[in-house]
Length: 445
Image 1 (cartoon, rainbow, N blue to C red):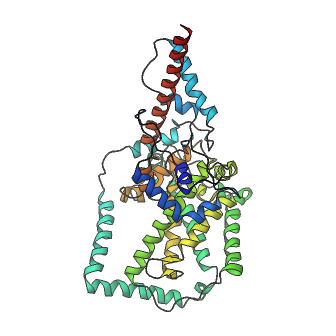
Image 2: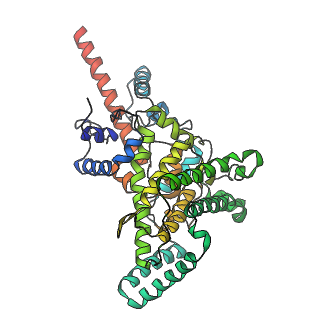
């Protein structure tokens, strides 16, 4: 019997409640309706990651990917009367792992050195901005407000965009079918090489201060060795080959539009595209960790193979073909959507900028650096950046969003909520066991 949509949505995520009287794992109405809306919007994407002939998703009894180490670390603070009782309770907690296998194997313990620094950054209260950060934030706000209300500013900025697009339109390679894919590939190359070589510019002392593990990068130029050509050739060849097949057999490349976008259209389409990609890929990424289809977890597990040290930017493109295909498929769909013209009317100039922006954000998130000019330091209210993604790679129970923070914060996929959930669940388990033992003793008496 196929489950109702509400059952499928509810099985996607179980939200905790520390109050055992209300029952751990209850979902608030606002969370339920928001997750339902996200699931309905992403129904075609969700179908891609479920086994054929089944839309059922196993109830996430272990939706946080518990390990025995994590369970014992976050066990209740109350101490049993005797060491024997304590050992029995720890055994009960540890048995949870056997009942609910971890969706994604993470060999490194939660207390890994590479994640302790990211934890401290994530837990910092308040934000004191540097002059550079204040300048960037202020410039962004002033530019947007000035463009909206000052006609002269509109003329200047629209003219600048038109001039750039005129040069692009008259450039021959820009009309090639694979030009947008080549720009995305160039973006990945530029950002990955830049972050790989960043320690040469910063110096050893500044680099160690800026890395999450306090150490120099591990094999930053591994991809440049002749014997490791597959680290860059495989993702590049599979990506360009797939896009070529797409334009050859599914969607013929349209000619460049003659009219340039306005500065306002360019900015809104760019932000909307990044936001929409993050929105659409969130449930897919979540299911890659929590899906009842074990092969999907293994497919994404290759991307999480590095747990012994802080990430390097090369990890951005180290994933299986199916994993990368899903990301590219979502991006291709998003690149067709415009808030002004509907499906298929997003301007090519916006699409090119979109490819450069998302490749930068992805490379930055995998860089292992925490520097003042990075996105999570300039706009910490909205962007999770490298600290959250570093934590996600070392602990697959938290931080599933690629760029923004609102879903992870709202649905409780944060370190604080995970600890509360584990504590509540362990306490419920212990109390239930103790009640059974007391009942058994009373029956025997």
